[in-house]
Image (cartoon, rainbow, N blue to C red; front, side):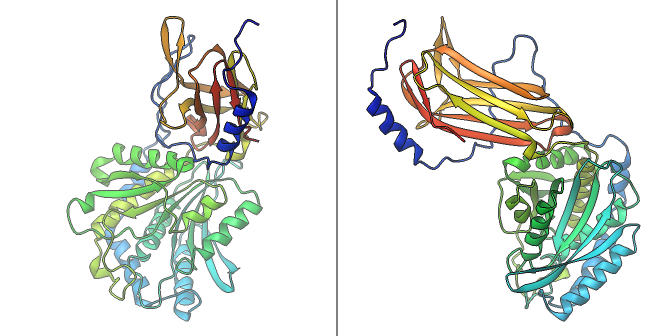
Length: 450
């Protein structure tokens, strides 16, 4: 034989694979892999995050008025504590409906029933100019705890949604824009759960949801100049857009975006559970009056809230000006390894399941790591040491494949990670796949992912 047999026998290999297969396969890290082997035919370039290019965004954020935000919160506070199911919550819902209906928007009540509770969401819509471009959502919850008038939690978020609806209703966007106010949040994200579930059942193309929940408290200059933006890997592109907006309009917005991982304790989580992109804007310094009877307007900072409102409008408008036609479900990722392959080889296959709709503009990162050290696998190729970490920028019509073969890696347990991120108008696309296995001499053993 041209290639030597593996030094461990087949029984040992089976035992290793059995041990690996019961391990918990953690998601691919959100940290970008910076080292890349470029294709010889082209030099990879960085694609900027798409932003609305017209002067409309500047006009919109300049229309934000702190006094209007304060008036909304005062009105909300005047209803007193308004837990879901109470007369006060119903009355507040009517006020919010009437306020949204006073703008050039279509508005409707969206009743829900879940976990022996009932409530009503309120939905206002700006129809998109493109029928298949999708839906972007900004949301907040209008219910409070029994003891709290809910000025900051979440009158602040509701006020931003109302102000955004008032301003943005004067414009038109490529995508449909929805302004959604949920009830049932304090009882366990009930209203948003039903909303996201119904959207999934009806196969709605929701590009992303921005959730606002507690965004009006700041007492120092530092606290008033920062905002937390939480998102999972699938939704990280939304933080890219908000960061781009804050960078583009520093004098008008004056906020530093603090990029943070996903958290589960607000209504954006309901969208994530149904595989939609969703992120959460949260004040930098959490108010000490959270969930108390002292959650009132006097403990809030309207200048800070106005900044958050400007950031929200700019981010939402930029998302709505994208032209995405594909969704997460339109990308397929598969990894295959050849049992007893000599030399070691594996194949990564990226599929666009809707080529008749659009091509998929993506960046593909493929990383081979040592399972225990998490360092990239190194291989000797002729006189050079090669790092097994590759990045490609592709426009996929139907299928793109990556194969490696003809190499001898050091013996080790491995993790093979593939991350696909959209660029240009496919920026909302995301897919990831991870599998584990072992390399023994000139053979590779991968546990199938499907």
